[in-house]
Image 1 (cartoon, rainbow, N blue to C red):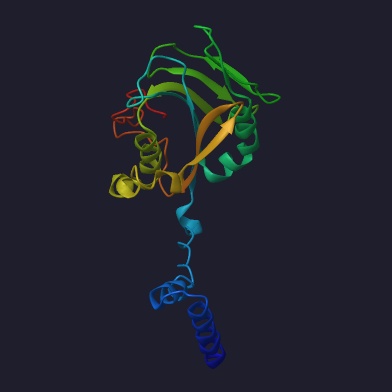
Image 2 (tube, rainbow, N blue to C red; image 1 turned 45 degrees about the vertical axis):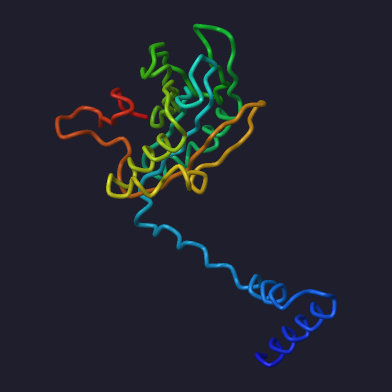
Length: 218
């Protein structure tokens, strides 16, 4: 088999030379036929106890390109609970629309049996909480700013801890997040699994704080 492969390579090089290609060109062609590197190993099952589904939708305001504002939709918790409500989360994301209305600047369609609890209207406050029919799952809706990489890194950190937060950078963020177009708008989505509870409480019993949202939950 090795001899046959070598013969094919020689034949290719001869054909390229006959066509007027230089030696360097024939070598380059042969080098580019290398087998691509193997994919990264999957996350072990015992490290996928928790899961976060989240989406970032651009907010219609006067934020700059360097500090865009987003609507965040986030469902997180035990892996089985998130999986049970994944279809409902996706249907909400696919129905999102923004509009010129100060009281309801973002709207969506709730799946059958889901309910909404209205929150505050200020930046960083929770705009709404969407609850599943059994009350076990919640989708938090908030408005906040920041670059895509900063927010995606924060969600990753909640599941893997600060020691692995820097695995996500501006250069590789879209290896972790997906860009989609929904109702004519850009939407950034993530689907992360990890060993840590993203809704964990701090030692004093309050919500886990982060530097970008003192209200927790996002």
